[in-house]
Length: 95
Image (cartoon, rainbow, N blue to C red; front, top):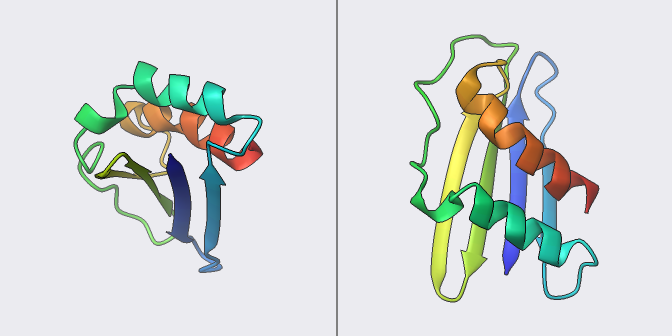
């Protein structure tokens, strides 16, 4: 399973990209379990209506697994929709 997390936005306009292959990462089994617990493949592409603000960073998490590809995007605005994905994002970035 290949997981990518990318972001952009915010005042500085800095972009980040992080990629994890769960087959080779020590964190792989935990990430796969977290994706299953979050029902990632059943989630809508956008968590909630886009928050407005030039200073907000926006993330997209994409997972490729067994011929399936799904992405979820959210703004780091502290909303319940973004909090749902923040823990998963932190795990991906730590892997």
